[in-house]
Image 1 (cartoon, chains in turn blue, cyan):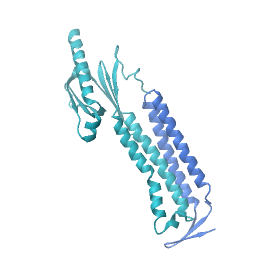
Image 2 (tube, rainbow over the protein chains, first blue to last red):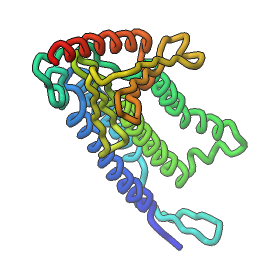
Image 3 (cartoon, helix red, strand yellow):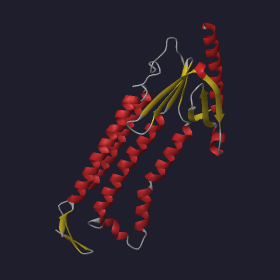
Image 4 (cartoon, rainbow over the protein chains, first blue to last red):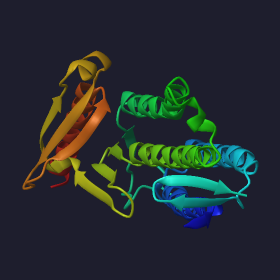
Amino acid sequence: MTFPLYIFLIIYFIFLLIWLIFSFIGVYHMLKFGFLNLTTFFVIFIFIAVSFLILIASYKYLSQIDWRMNISIFGDIIKINF
Amino acid sequence: MLSIYRLPGKLPDEKVMKVLRRDLFILVKKILFFLLLLILPFVLSYLVATSIFPEILFGQISYPLFILLVSFFYLFLWVFFFFSFIDYYLDVWIITNERIINIEQQGFFARTISEQRLERIQDVTSEVEGFFPTILKYGNVYVQTAGAKERFFFSEIPNPDEVRDTIIKLAEISKKRAAHIA
């Protein structure tokens, strides 16, 4: 059985979407139920900034990989075809 | 958004005396746990690199999978830490000269706001139990009110004895005022 490596990337993007929904829910709760003060906005800012840093670092590493590579699986042996 | 200047169901001449959250040590514990999990991928990759199969980290399939897993791990770790902070930050107890208000976030999409009038308070108990609570002076305060089965519960707040004294003092003033009006 052969399948391209980008299948893993698609699964990753599905989880990224779930993560995005969780993040939105978190920020929404802070804005709706948090106190109207600097701490609330500072925490939201830090959350978004660190999230961006993780996403940028992930992109940096993921962009170096050739995702069009095919993976062949024969039983328990994994082979790579270019 | 909640503001101490716009309390839920604010009464005329109501003044905020204290705004309480769980002790800062509870947040520090969460941060330490988060930091411990933060180094987990580094520890695992070090263990694999020093094992008998160090090439597993740089394989043509294992390397992309490793990068995806690490990215996934950090993104979800960060969002769950954010949730944990929200749980700490949104649980608030407010003591005013008229009532005590308990605002509790119970996970997402579940929020409880309860209040008790000070003149209805019958008994206030503070409790400090355990090594860290004793050293760092944090604990629980239970407020028993007339007719209420459930006690009002301030969880892991700093200086519980001081808070108990404040509630008792304010309750006495409130009872005197209520008796004077009657």
